[in-house]
Length: 94
Image (cartoon, helix red, strand yellow):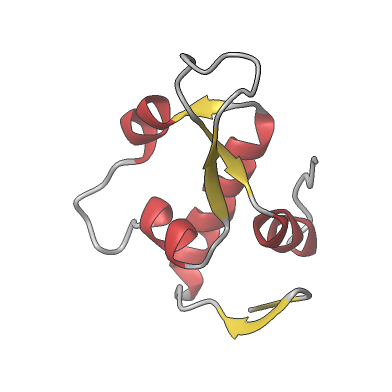
């Protein structure tokens, strides 16, 4: 699957793509810490590698609250992640 802002093709297979899109939609719902993300999405199964696929393809990133340097970083969708989710009919929040 191609995205508008990058000509690279995601390497996830069809079944993995559904899992990846579910992961992106979950991240889009609200800010999640890295710990929350790993607790919910960590997998030792190579067929369920949503976190690894998302990070390898530049679909998610980590961000800190500028007003609270002590706050734990949160996982956010990148522009590329929002574009992929929107192209699949999911929410594409800023």
